[in-house]
Image 1 (cartoon, rainbow, N blue to C red):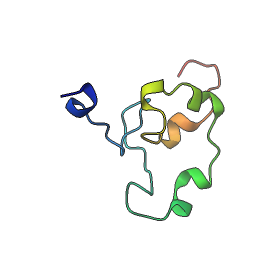
Image 2 (image 1 turned 60 degrees about the horizontal axis):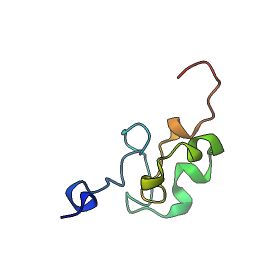
Image 3 (image 1 turned 90 degrees about the horizontal axis):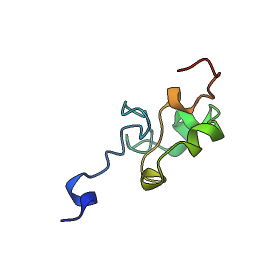
Image 4 (image 1 turned 135 degrees about the vertical axis):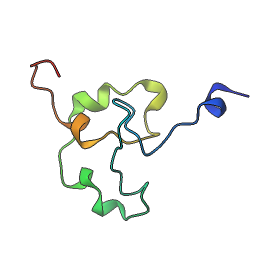
Length: 72
């Protein structure tokens, strides 16, 4: 069994913080209704997703916000 089979990715969880990502597609809703279609997603957040998780699960609205540099 491969590591991916042993630990399948939960597409409903943010790959950065592990909280619910609130993805409309995962919930069976149209993509147009997803929060990410209405809110900006920072390039910094996308770049921080580990390579092995990119394109497999959406990040959550909180992680999608640009960091202010104030240490969150």
